[in-house]
Image 1 (spheres, each protein chain N blue to C red):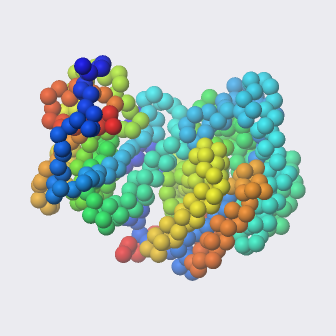
Image 2 (cartoon, rainbow over the protein chains, first blue to last red; image 1 turned 60 degrees about the vertical axis):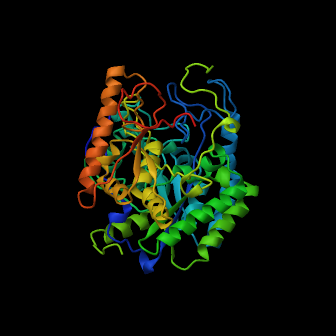
Image 3 (cartoon, rainbow over the protein chains, first blue to last red; image 1 turned 45 degrees about the vertical axis):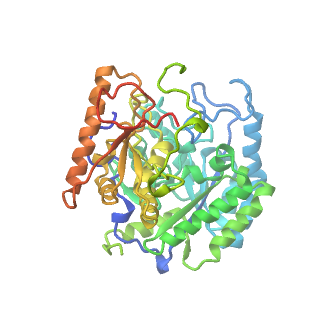
Length: 315
Length: 175
């Protein structure tokens, strides 16, 4: 339904809440910024089922195939660069995160959960949190799915992560941030407690699904390494500066009320040899500051939930 | 002789009377924040939400606007915003903050996801009248706590016809 002249949002999934009118949010040890690093471990299918729409770019149009091949021909470019991330890039990213004592939040799609036990093992060694990330990079949630098809899609993804890691995931990051009008309800129904698709805030917030409990831990799609390089066409030097400025702005405002920085990475992009030094520099810049809480998605949401309801007024 | 659609004459800047700004200023400086609401399910995509786009626009209203407002006020810059009209009702805190900072308003449609290309002339006139009346009414309500001053309205919607004699003083689509 198109929106009508009325108070608040035009969908039922959360309430309107300008950040300046909220009670103060304090992170553990009065940190100014909660830092979460979400790394996507994802597979670019050789083939997708008939009728699967193209992945969608954050610009709104189809992201398409890497090689520009006609449908029906394998997309070697996309297949290869995603596989590069899982074969090579991820280990560079792990090394940088280890250096700064950052525990990653790993978004596993079903293909990786099923077929790449080594990556799961590497994550477990680091105490990583595993969240669900759909079936594959190219099999996105789309409006051609019936309610039951989408329900099955979500449970297949969640169960694959549970089977691979031994723990049922409580976080969800949809491939390409795609959702139907049913997705938040179906996620809550499947036991998901936080979703990363809604990049509209610098704090978590409680969502209002039809049943169950759901929080938003928004990834700003326009600041992740995928968008910023491949769509935003920024050079790596620009990204280095922009991400540090992003943190600096949050850090300044975090003196008043806590902010979060959710850095969203793809090993096939940020794990490239010419980019990894810049990730190192950005995280080095962030971690020299006192008052940065390095956390996983679940830790941030749990803290936020426990803290909500306190009513310290903004200064 | 102007070219179609004959809405302005060619006027090279070397051949015009000199403009003097107030106090002989060299540059007139205008900040035009876009105050926008992008619908979850717009008319042209009634079943398919675009979460990244929706969330990006919503970020502006939940977080970004407030940061920008502080900077504009710090530098004593009064803005004339490009206003999606319905934002005034959806987000009254933003309306109150704009009024408190004495902003002006330029018409920028009802919702950012709702173009008016297919409007008939009659519907477009109603649209303009609604826009003007509603902004003035909301402003008046909000200003009752302070002093009523003025509300100027400009338009920016990609169209140049219509307006139907309504008091719209500027069109800024051709810049």
